[in-house]
Every structure is written in C-alpha cells, then in structure tokens.
Image 1 (cartoon, helix red, strand yellow):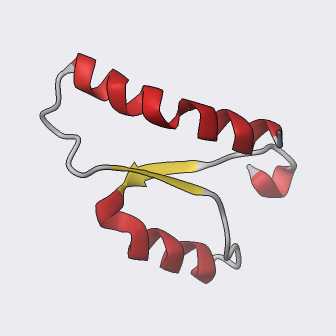
Image 2 (spheres, one colour):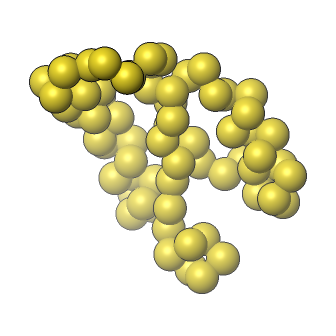
Length: 67
C-alpha cells in the first residue's frame, strides 16, 4: 500500500517485534511503522480486544494521517 502512496501500518503482538523488523528490512522497508500490542490476543474477549484497540487507536491515526 505504501508503494502505491496509501499510508499503512502493521499491527501485531509484541512477540513478533524481531520478526516484523526483519520482514520490513527484507522488503526494503526498514523503519516501516509497526504498532505492537501485548501477546497473546487469542482467547481474549471482545471487550479485552476492544481495550487493546483503544490503547493503540491514537497511534494508528497519527501514522495514517501524518499528524
């Protein structure tokens, strides 16, 4: 999406910090924005997932809008 000029961000759990950085570097996108949320998320209730989403919402908007 970024190559097409559309801002994007990756969201994953903190267990994948090293993996996401390595993948970005492999694709020539070092420094690509990745937002991490605590691992694990499998098995969380909808309310718990919403809480995680609420915690990162402002960061997502900032990255996508450049503000």
